[in-house]
Image 1 (tube, rainbow over the protein chains, first blue to last red):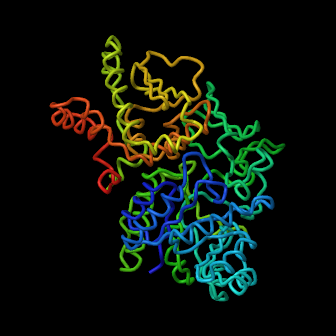
Image 2 (image 1 turned 45 degrees about the vertical axis):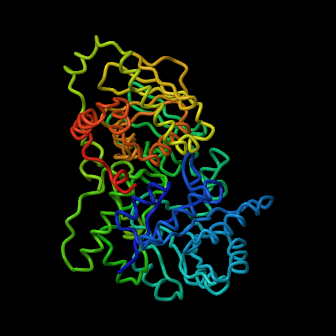
Image 3 (image 1 turned 180 degrees about the vertical axis):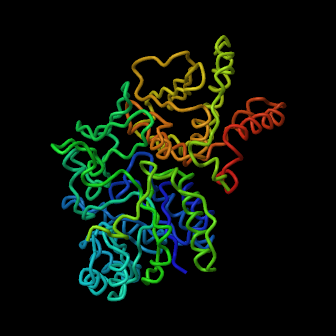
Length: 326
Length: 181
């Protein structure tokens, strides 16, 4: 059966994920070394140690995401994160930076290493480089590939593959996107924050809500219109042809209906996005996919509730998994 | 296990307007004393919650249940709570939602982002402070019925039953977090 990899932004969310049936939980330290560096989120060193021990006691694994790119003047922060995650007993490190992979492979040669989606490793050559050079055992594939492409890459790679099945949908070249940086000076790649909340404002007007990022108006939502995150990629732009979403709509990925295709493609693990979300999200989404996987294994119809209430913009998409534009 | 129907936003009841209207003349001081006591107790029992707030621990939050005729002004450090008819100006952030959704958020039974997407939660002001507060509360796994009933001394057990019954009506049964703690 494919593994279910679940997000946790806090120790409580990690416990919720385990209770709901996660095979593994991914999480990060409360600093700029991980790509969800939001206020009040993430794990102290002590919380990480205790959470890993708890997870192991319950038969679950913990993957520590150290998936931002180190600043040249402060590499020690990232090296310390790697060392501390290893000593805390992490089952794998999820890394994006080549230098950090090199450090980990040399310093901790027995530590299992996964290639983060932030590495944007989207072809067999790139994946082979990480596997042969640093001994990477798994690659998290970017959300820009179709299912047949995933099958082809998995067939040609020595690495296990992991794909996103639910949550925020990033269609940019992950790890290279500069949109947030352009608007705020901070990015998920370096500071671990896409559209940092310190630069977000919501203004209530008679017509609804206006969301802004770094002074740029991102969107205006009518009073009862579903809303999305205030990210530039999901902004509503005014052009000569009219106003609309140019890069992508404010929707969430939901690949529940593609699980069989993913299994047939040889995918090892399914990942749920959302370390920034609350326990209620983790509990419900993890349980949803645990049921869907059980139904897939038994060949029965999945009797599962819709995840629509948890989706951005109250809508979902299969994204690039089902490409219709080629 | 969290009841999926309760965890999904859009399913929680609102206070009927007639009930809210009948509450208008009620004095606010008794409610302020009880809720202030609950906040003090949460402060004593959950130091990690205030660590998670970090630099936002001294922020002043205005919380407005949209279906009740009063609102709350809350500061975390030192813990202070006032019940007011209308939110004053000068707050760091304002949070408004139905009373049931606010309770469910406090107990981690609904997802704040999902409430934002469905427009059932409105935030104004310092978004970073609100996010820190949401994450800190979500990790604390608060049980408001237990916290409030502890203020009633020997009457704590029956008070807890009353609070739990009210909670069931508004937001469903206790969440996963409390059971697995």
